[in-house]
Length: 268
Image 1 (cartoon, rainbow, N blue to C red):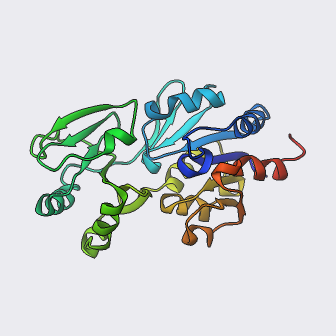
Image 2: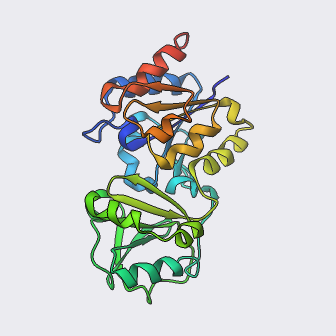
């Protein structure tokens, strides 16, 4: 029995205007009121998606969000960290060395803020990520604490060329995923959305047999593969679609609502 629905945001739950449609909102609110856990799964921090959490009414004591692509599971009300997994500054050093040699923009994130590296070309991350503090820092001056990820945020045409030339040795050091056409994320090796969801499922004494997931991109692949119902949008990437239980309509056609209205017909 499905008792939790986990949803990617960009190009999945959100339409091309970066909005949750009224149809998707109404369906998810109804399912949430019926006792099904509705969990947003994103690479962003919770502050950056707070308006979406409020729109869906995910502000009850047992509501959680998967942030930083599985690196942090956070309670929406208390902001308590149920689970977190990050990297040390030393873990990021191979990536720092690489971008410095090739003069590639890079941002480093802990669980609270973004450090925009000023000894590299400036990134476009501020235009993509809102409602979070950005702090200028040189690589040498970064604090020696835990980081959630590092991000290359570059116009899509430039990023695609950079990705083609990333050395295999560097990619093996991280869980590297392209979450949007202009964003490449470097996460701890063992972090993905399924890892965060497993911690949350365990918290509620549930398993992946109780999970339905919706996604479209590389950073959704593990949770699509793990869930009893792994649903991919019509606009999803071909490799992600291969792992799907089913394909639904696109993000601009309310694909989340389309599938849920059919699957949960007795509840809606």
